[in-house]
Each structure stands twice: as structure tokens, then as C-alpha cells.
Image (cartoon, rainbow, N blue to C red; front, side, top):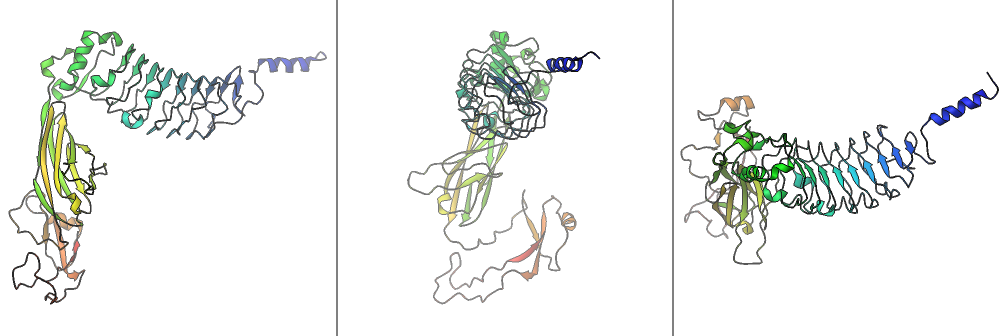
Amino acid sequence: MAPGAPALLLLLLLLLLPPRTAGCPAACRCYSATVECGALRLRVVPLGIPPGTQTLFLQDNNIARLEPGALAPLAALRRLYLHNNSLRALEAGAFRAQPRLLELALTSNRLRALRSSAFAGLAQLRVLYLAGGHAPNLGALFPHDLLSLLQRLQELHLQENSIELLEDQALAGLSSLALLDLSRNQLGTISREALQPLASLQVLRLTENPWRCDCALHWLGAWIKEGGQRLLTSRDRKIMCAEPPRLALQSLLDISHSSLICIPPSVHVQPLELTANLGEDLRVACQASGYPQPLVTWRKVPQPREGRPRAQAQLEGGAPGLGGHSASDTGSGMLFLSNITLAHAGKYECEASNAGGAARVPFRLLVNASRQQPQQPARGPPGEGALFVNDYSDGPCTFAQLEELRDERGHEMFVINRSKPLFAEGPAEAPPDCGPTQGAGPGLRVPPPVAYEIHC
């Protein structure tokens, strides 16, 4: 080998390697103003990224959180790719130090909610990728004022998110948006108001959603035929109906206006009036029917007197309740009143609404000021939801045996064991200094209630 050949060979190898700037993070590749740190199993944003970086690839890692200040040195950043990571939330002001950012990719993370200030500082953002795997309710993912900060946004990619609801104000403020992709979600309907703020829209993608072709989509079919089709490719114009069954697999544009119908809701509350004792819990069912499935809302009718404490109520399942606010559920709304006080007494209203109209039913709650145990009601003919208690004093039985003890109408039957009282029975006489017991006739002695163990 000629003298100096090894040195020449080493020089050639160095020239073939990608250029690497000083201070490049370990295992990353840095060249010009671009840093590539993709698919390195990173859990955090690596340290040592050159401050002049304009494009940063962090995709296909395991980053679950953007640590405060992790991006602070990167004020020159123009493009940030964080897709295919494990992000569950974005801290307020996570990108505040990136005022020049033009493109942000957050596709295929695990975001479930975003704070109002998550995108604060991104006044120049043009493209936002939020496709794949986020919240099914766009209102939950986006607070109503979140996207209003992105006034120069031109592309919003929301496909493959299982989005079931696009709220009327979810896209407010996006007057510069040119492309909106809502394909491959779970949208059953969409309102004209939801798309109305998009004055600059040029491309709209709505395909592969389970559209419910009823009266609420009258406007969409007419809008596409009148000029909205300029926003849709030939494929996107094929908005296929998933329901009702008679219209399934038909294109919205091929269905006559008269076939897109709604059935106004009907609502039923039984009974319309109840009396409860202090400290009890109460559930009141509101059954609603109609097409599409009505939204059921309970509310307490305001009383003329002010200064009265607000009742705490909620729908079963933990939805926020009354106390000055409404609570909603679909189909059957269950009003749940916990630890009843005098403040719960009054008039309530159950409303069921859908695109075909609304229906309301009043309900009145009376509260017994006495804390005494309610008297056993007279047993009438068995009705739906009745609970039958059988006095088997020979001890407990299994769930399988209880199933066998159901009556001919399928009502559940429980076993009470009178050999195991929870409270000992005291003397029947009332104390001499007490007045007549409420609800008892003159001279009658009311024995104290005895609670027994129930096996179920």
C-alpha cells in the first residue's frame, strides 16, 4: 500500500458520513438546520439540540410528556414532528417559546383533553396534524376557545379520531382554514353552524363516517348540490348513510328531501310527584323516545324566592347536575338526588330534544321535614320494577337460588333473615314527655323500627 493511503482512506470515509454539527444529541443526526431523532425509543426531548434548529424530528418514540422548558431554547423552530409518541396531555404554553412554528404533527398520540392555552404563542402556525387516537368528543379535546388562538391555521387534520360530535363552536375563529379533514371518524351528523366560521375553506373531507340521514342533514345535501361540491373530490361527495336501516348504504345526494325525516320526541316521567324524607337518596327516571335518539336534560325550575340554598343533583353516572345548571344524557335520563334536604323540594322539568323538536314533562318533589322512617306502603298489584322480599328465616341463599325465586313476571326476589336483627327491639311505649307521634292515631303506640339482615 502506498505511503499515506490509510490517511487518504480515512478522509474519504469521513466525507461520506452525514455532516454533524457540534453539540448534536447522542444517536441523533444533525445537518444544516435539521435534527433527526426519530425511532430512538426516547422518553423525553433530548438535551443538546442546537438552538438554531428549524426542523426537529421526534416521531416514533415513547415521549409521554413535554417537560416544562424542554423546547425553550428552540425559538427558531419552524417544523416539529411528534407523531407516534405517547403524549397524553399538553401543558399550558407548551409551545410558547416557538413563535415561528409553521407545522406541528401530533398524530397518533393519546391526547384526551387540551387546555385552552396549550397552543398559546403559535400565532404563525399553518398546519396542525391531530389525526388518530384522540378524544371521541371534539369539544372535550378542544375547549371552545382553543383553536381561536390559531387564526392563521390553514390545514387541520382530524381523521381517524372516533369523533362522534362536532360542536357548533368547536372550529370558531378558523377563518383562514383551507383544508379540514374529518374523514374516518364516528360522526353521525354535522350542523351548518359548525362549518360556518370556515370562510376560506377549499377542501373538506367527510367520507367514511356513519352518517345518520335524517332531517338534520337536509342542509348538507342541499349545500353540496348548490355549490359545496367544489370543496369535495368525487370520492368525498359519496356521503353514505349508515342509518336509518331503510336508507343504509345509500348516498345522501341520491335521497329525496322528503325521505330525510325525524320523529319528534315524546317523554314520560312516572310518577309526576314524589315525597321524600330528609337524608334519603332519590332516583327519578325520564324515558324518552324519538328519532334520532333524543337528548334528555333535567333542570330545576327556579323558585320565585332568592337566597335559598341550591340543591345538589346529578344524573346517574356522574354527570354534572343541577344546582343552577342542566345535566344531560341520551335516551333515558336518570335524575339522582343525594342526601335530600329541604332545598331539594320544588318543581323539576325533564326535556327531551332532537332535530325534530322538543318535549317537556314537569315533576314535583315534596320533602318530609321529619326524619322518621317511612311507613310501609300498601302492597298493590305487582308492577314493573317492583321488589319482592320473601321472609325466609332459615338463613341466606345463593344468587343462583335467588334466580330461581323470581316470580312469573321476572321480578327480583330477596331473602330477609329475621333471626339476625341489626338493631334490638326496644319497649313499645313512647317517652312520657313526647307528644303524639306524627302519622299515628290518638293513643296508639308506635314500636321502633327493626332492621333485619337481607341476603342477596
